[in-house]
Image (cartoon, helix red, strand yellow):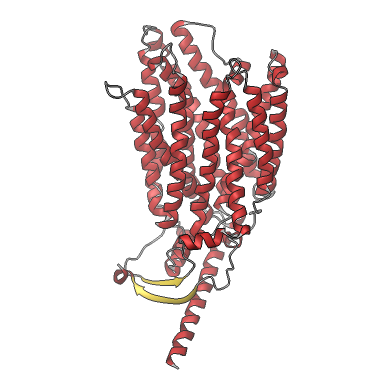
Length: 536
């Protein structure tokens, strides 16, 4: 009799906790946009701003490095590829590692760690030097790999934190706003480079053309300034609360999560009482067996395949398109100048900066913000499908019509327009949605891991693009293979259309609905109250 009463009281307690969990989740899902939501966007967004700045700055800095350390005033192909590809390789490692760690030890505990890695590695790059045993390019490659690990951690952490705090109707726009900070980081790198080049014009003109010592100051400043936004954001990252979904579904502490939600939604802060009673609920726990069980079901596995392959296909073109920026800059009058000597060095660096500012403002930034307007009304899947279809068409035209498009100045304008249009539809399309969907479509205990796997697939595409296509483009002569590379991009965009069909539409649905798990009685079995101090 006593046993049945105990069993009955446990059932009631589990039912009570289950109800409290649902009510707490409903509070998050239905919350109005508040200053706390704006803070989450800003704190997460600064990370992506820094990521894009650090990644993009090397495209300009590598030219500067060539003037100082290269033979014939430019880096050899292996050195150039090394400094550019080290970061994506590190990013792939960071995405998998931090994605997994955020699900195991918590979003809050890892948030800020990846920013510290980025800050230290950026500072290390700016101070890199040469010696008998160490080459400055080799030191830079190592530091850029380490920085990449930090950048990789930012993807799953920022995506999951912004999605788990967002209310359902604004979740897409919040995640979009975080990701769109990349566009401003990209733009800022070119702007800062332009200011540095202008500031050093006087000293540069008095330089001995054989040494170009002042260019050494310029690239160090350009890369080193990437620390500043990271340092500003670090305090806020370290003090952001743990997401209630992690506290509830992974730590299984419903009482603390409910308290956090009430505090966050009312005051934007959270309080942790070390003596509080902890109610541990029995909930599905992450394990290798549970992971296999969840993803062995086709309806769950197909989503992971869809998000991973879509990101892979997109990044082949997104990063590969950067290989053509030299042709575009030449076409819009910002290519290599005819002037020689020190004046030619200044003109070339200025042209690269101004040209990149124009390309960034013309295609990249508008695409992010048009997507922001439509992502919660039109939906993620239609935007991704439309983006891949448009990109397939654009790359077919650019690839098969390449010779005619670059034949004269008039047709080059059409090529530039198509290039900017491709940038636009990447961001008002799969570049943004491939970031958003994996942050929504999986259960809390695997959300960060699955986002990390999807993002790492994308970085694999970026590495393929940067290594493979850098080797391919000069087959048959300088840039002779570029038209075929554009045709290859078209093929990958076509395959992206089919992988998009595997993903669900996530707009207007709660994260729990999207997890493909029954939420009735999600918390089951015994819920034993014990004090935190006893547990410790």
